[in-house]
Length: 224
Image: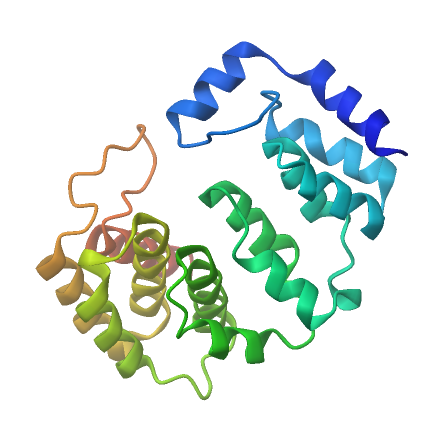
């Protein structure tokens, strides 16, 4: 499938209503207004196509970049290509799809995570916190959770929103997955008050860390 063929498909799937909704949620710049769910069937038809992925990414269209994350082969990206990608997302949605579909599948992601944790670029640091949160959930051995909590307590309140959201996610997962750190994670959440007044739809869990932690722990205990 060529770039022109894919872009034509995206344009046909777009709508002004979706563009308006995307814009309200922080998507700016070039976009067609395609629903995220409509991207996966296209990716399934393409399968893996790194050259096309770069062409889509470099178009700077929002949906094209989201689609690109689904058709890269992370194991074949060079270190230079990864470094090029990590700071380029135009919004948190592109960053999160890049992290989920590419960065978390990198063979040497731990080396990148450690390097990026010292970055001052918001999107690069968002990727670092995303990879850190994955380790908190899946492989905490060797992680200094006390130091992570210290950093979250010190930096989260004044962090750019792109980083604050992911740091809060990490804080909640530490509290959920590490009983020995749970009280402190809750205390930090209460102290900072980040997302305390965040409005959520009925039936959804608040991102306010103390509420989030309690809800997930209660749910796990109820099903154990």
